[in-house]
Image (cartoon, rainbow, N blue to C red; front, side, top):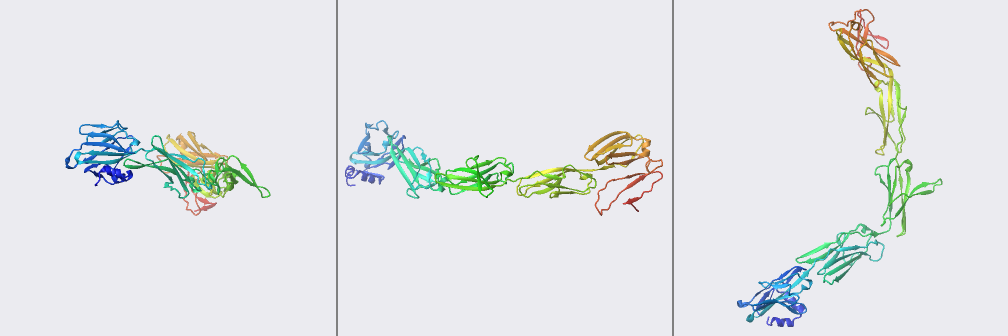
Length: 578
């Protein structure tokens, strides 16, 4: 440079000089080189230090250092000489001082401190030099506040309606607002978007920025999520804040309407609580009216209004088969002048109580055959099965019993299900009673004992009506009764008479009687029972009732006791078997 720095400043415009100075890290004037940071950023209310370093050729000491600021001219704020230093009487007098390393310290930075600060060095014969730094002040804005259009947006509106307003206060410098829909930024002029932004400077010097979003919306935007974002700069970083997300009420006409059985999710059965849901695709939801539709004798429809519905849901409590039928809902859209209706058929499934033929109890004689019929009516085809002692014994409505015996008696159940309606079922039981004269059995037909022994013997009798058991001798007797069976236990002291005649168990009911003999044999005797008197033989068989199948090989045993020794013969159907 051939001209002094002051002459350069006099010749240059202020803007041009700033550009010139900011393009160099050092400015050389009169051979004194002064260095300052180009830009220093600081938060409002914080303290800041501006370092000034310099070099003088020939190691000459400086004579004075001055700090100035430049804004609409230059103003000295601090002087440092060889023997004294002081702050000029300016607005900075109480907020600044210069440290030993020539750094300017400013406390509690304010917005008006955003200006150019100059460090100026006088070095006697070495000349004069200075440099400058830009101090930039920042203040974080308040979180954005959103005001949403609560009236709603009509999609058929030809204008571009206001969606929402986003505002942030107390920012410095001016923050920027960006709008988002479904996380995608909205651009001015694209897809019917219009964004109007206003900036207001408050008396404090801070800024309020307000951005109003206008946009055309469609039916698909009913669930769209909007929010605004405030972008701002703070020392050394770019930051942003987001508003709360919000939805906009989008008003659009009804194009479709549906009527469905909302609950239960399974087929409807009697006793259920049924919900019929009517829903039109209008926003906001229209008013719904429900009807049950009948057909008159001449074929015309008759609508019976049902006024117990609420917000498109018709609840029918404890439904019966008579609740089945044709239902209709109608929606009237007064805003867009549209009326639509939807229909559905409600089917209530049912299963009537089971009927038995013959009714319980079913009384049979031993050897009888019978068929028990289970029947019912239902809304759909039914499936039948018969169970006995928790086992399935027949499929279908008929239970065929043939050649019944006492073991055939008991409780039978008819279970009815409806395959087309899971969970809809019924059951009914029937008691089968098999009647007949008693059948008697004893556990031992020949017992070895000694005279005067205490003998315990047991006799069982099957029959219906329940038989009564008697013994041929007197002793202590205990009876136990179950269905169709009586068990009797006899405890008796053995006598000579018992050794000769044995002990007889007899069972009797209204249909007849039967008996069984228990022969006694003295323990010392190893040949025949102690029957010494003459008379008819005593006969015993191990089984009085045997269940077999045709073509089975049957083995049976018969014993006879008597004096003289008896002869045994067998006969089948009246014919002697050899």
